[in-house]
Length: 65
Image: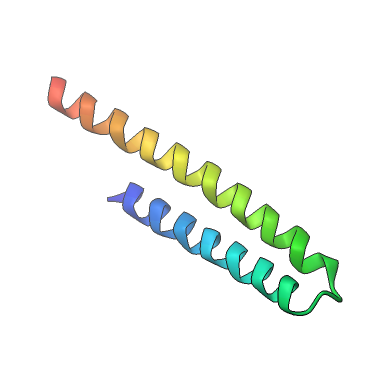
């Protein structure tokens, strides 16, 4: 059950990154929007990858026992 919350939070951080990048492209004045959007996207993608890998490992371990 924990993995579902991690996956959901990573999806929300990816969405936040998209919104930061979108707001940067609409209003080009603040470079912090671009930097934080890229960081959100990287963090969300890495976290999602790790959560899915952990979920697969947990499922394969529970099938063996």
